[in-house]
Image (cartoon, rainbow, N blue to C red; front, side, top):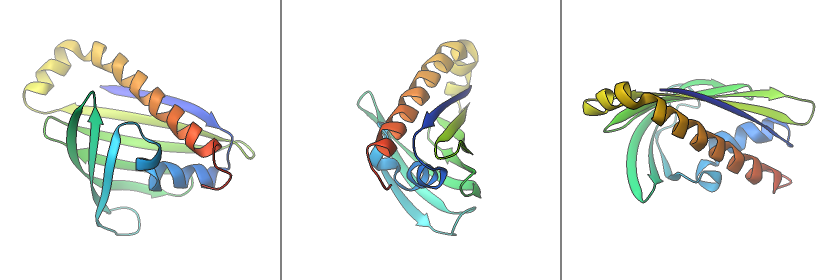
Length: 147
């Protein structure tokens, strides 16, 4: 499954980049915890993340795969049932910022079969979830003068 969404946020690019990458548990509706395992100052940094959706918690281990502040960041998350390759791109709009997020979900085991059969249903749901997450990021950034 491959989903991509974008949104414009009325904050400077540096603030939005920081919020998207360093304050995720404060704005995300799905990420309930995010803990650094080994900080390498960018690419190679590893972390543990717990998400919750519809009352179900999932744990992922992650690694930063791209770190180019304030323009681009990417991580690879490894979970029990699926892995997620996700990236953020940030575009300076003269004091505003366009954020684009792309997530590619790779099924594991039986989940791979389910995705192959019903991927279109999950993809639509994934786009709605990403839209909701970016809307939360926008609200978080715009509600604070300094993020």
